[in-house]
Image (cartoon, rainbow, N blue to C red):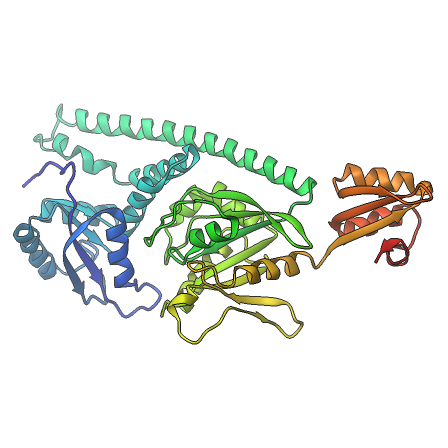
Length: 433
C-alpha cells in the first residue's frame, strides 16, 4: 500500500530506545524538550527496550505493529525517534505507519531551521538539511515507482531522481562557496581585532545553560533568550569594557547537545570558528542540572571536534538562584588562577566576579601601565602608536612622552629588545608607578 507524504501536522508520537550501551543512550527528558522546541504536540511517549537494533525498522516488528495502531488511534501526523535512522529504516517505517517519520538529526535540523535569523544562519541550516536530505531523495518519488516496471517503464522515476540529485549538488556547491566567503570575512574581522590587540572571549556550553541570559546581563544587550533548547543560533558579538584591561569582544554562540550531528558541526564551522579562535572560552554550565557532568563531557567533545580543546577555559556555573546555600564566588587553582565562577545571570549576582576573573586571565601576559619615554626614544614611541597600543599621551617637564600603554608583554619585550635594551630592566626603569 502506498501513501502520499503529509504536508504538515504537529501531533507527534515520540519513540525512545532504552538500550544497554551508555555511549549511545539518549536522555528521554531532553528528547521531549527538543520536540517541544520544534513545536510538536506530544500525544504519546513510547519507551522501547531494545538492546540489538533491527536493520529493517531499528525496533522489533511487534513494536512496529503496536506503534502503527497507536498512530491511527491518536491520529498522529508524525513519529519521532530519539535516535539516528538510516534512510531505508525511515522509508520502511513510513510505509507501515502511513505518516512522516523523523529521527533525532532531522528533529534538531528542524529546530535550527526555525531559529535561524541571519542570512548566514539560514545558509548553514540549509547546507545541513540538504546534506541530510541527499541520502533520502528516493522517498519523495515513490509515486513514480508504482508503474509496472520493465522495458520502457523505468525512465521517468530515475530521470527525475537524477535531476533532483544534480540540482542538489549545484545548490550545495553554491552554499559552500557563500559560506567560504563568510568564513573569510570573519577571519578578516578577527585579524582586525588582533591588530588592535582586542582579546576575544566566547560563551560556549550545553544548550539552555543560560548563555544568552548571561550575555545580556554582562553586556546589557537584548539578545533573544528563552527557556528552550537552541534559543540562540546566530552568533552575536558585543564590545565589553573591563577594569584594568580595556575592551574585549564577547561572543554568544550556538549551544551544544549530546551527540550533536556531525553535519551540523560541519555546516556551522564558520560560526564555531568564532569559538576556536578566541583567547578565552567561558564554559557556561547549568549548576542546577543533575546531568551536568555528562553535559560538560559533551561540550568538551564538540570543542575537540572544532579544534578548540587547547584554549584557556573558565567554567561559569550559572543558575545559582535555583540552588540553596551557595553564594557567588571565584574558585582558584593551586597557583591562584581563576578556574570556576558561581553566578546567577537571572538576578545578576556574581556578574562582577566574571569580569574580574576574565580580566585576571587575559591580563596575565598583558602590560597595562604608563611608560615615560625620553625624546631619544622617538622610534619606539612611533612603533607603539603604529600597533595601536597607546591609549593616551601626555608630556613631562623635559618634553618626554608619558604613554598609557596596553599591549601583550611579549610584544613590548620584542620592541624594547630591537632598540638594544634589556626588556625587564627597561620596563622597570621607564614605568610610572
